[in-house]
Amino acid sequence: MPYIKQEQRKKWKKIIDETTKNLKDVPDDKKEGELNYLFSTILKKSYSRNYFSFNRLIGLIECIKLEMYRKIIGPYEDEKIKENGDI
Image 1 (cartoon, one colour):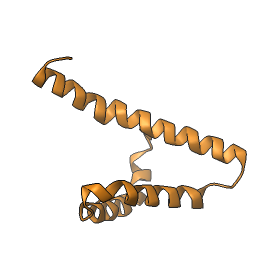
Image 2 (spheres, rainbow, N blue to C red):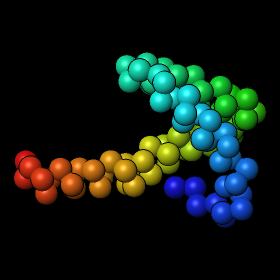
Image 3 (spheres, rainbow, N blue to C red):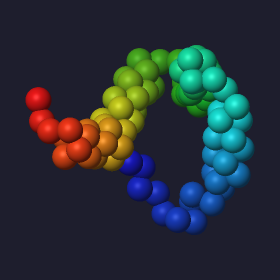
Image 4 (cartoon, rainbow, N blue to C red):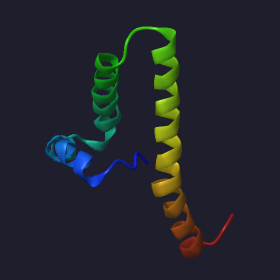
């Protein structure tokens, strides 16, 4: 997770709250498209068009994926194992 200082997080809170509020109105089967558009547009506008930036960008996306698994999906899977038994 991007463990930035609490004071740095404040500048993003309003944007995050507004974005997540808007996403709650999006049907589940459309969320991936909306999020893909949102993230792709932000990243496209935030990085230069060169190999170094593209390489960093792919690393960032991979780290986001791994952190989501570590902090959210893994614990969910552990709960389900306790609830239903392991495979």
